[in-house]
Image 1 (cartoon, rainbow, N blue to C red):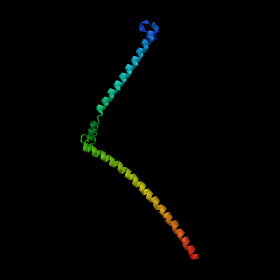
Image 2 (spheres, rainbow, N blue to C red; image 1 turned 30 degrees about the vertical axis):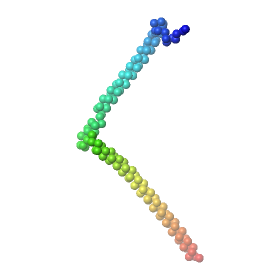
Image 3 (cartoon, helix red, strand yellow; image 1 turned 90 degrees about the horizontal axis):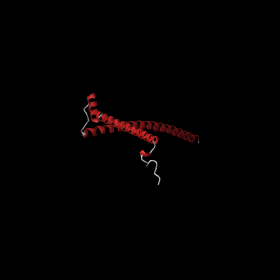
Image 4 (cartoon, rainbow, N blue to C red; image 1 turned 45 degrees about the vertical axis):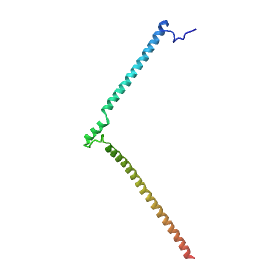
Length: 133
């Protein structure tokens, strides 16, 4: 029964293959270690930034900067703020709809004017033709 090459313990391998395998193992281990260190560093930086840029701290800082009372902690105030944002969005949509309605009104008025003019011309022609008879 033959053993696979990888199943043979490294003691029985030749020196060249052992050194190659060992160097490969070392390089892989180095890569893994550097990757883990990088990810740990990234996570640590992210946690630090998250703690530094805490939402409440930012809101209070902005409130102090612009002399507005902070909207933190009170749920009713947060709800009111959200509703104001929704109302602003709806007002913007309403403005757009009003502009479109005005545009449509002008176009429909122009169309009705044109139709009135054509109808009166036709009526005049009919009237004139009846008069001639």
